[in-house]
Length: 188
Image (cartoon, rainbow, N blue to C red):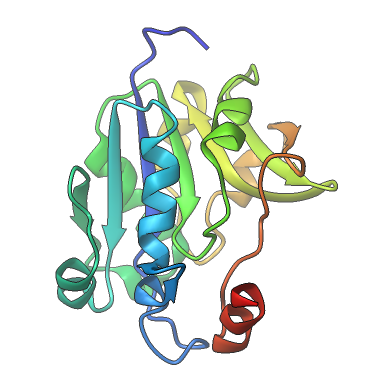
């Protein structure tokens, strides 16, 4: 990765939290909301900008989480699924050379994992954990234009067929928090 690369980090935090039973972005872990954990990882990774994509309960999340220093993009179409949030984040990022995408419900992604995935060559790269695909995902210019056209709830999975697979199991834990039970497990 060229040090002059203009990069933006995007935290996808627009979901309703239906399985969780409320705004999981605000569920506390180690004294702070989940969305703040993802934002802290981006801040520690040396990206030029951090963008948090909100949707359901955007005002509530904005009021309760410390999102200072981040750009906020509110996705009016959040209910369409993950692709709408990705498109919204990419629109907020504008013309950049690369985008790093994280999910707000994965509090154990580290700046070191982000750096390792960013260092991988090619138009796209993604973290894998024991061979299982996860986040962060890095999209570069060749893939960004196609990512802006995504539809449905599949995110950018279809764009990552040839992405570099970067093992990050030694640097981060991909555990995501989908339910209150998941949260209780990681709190122990």
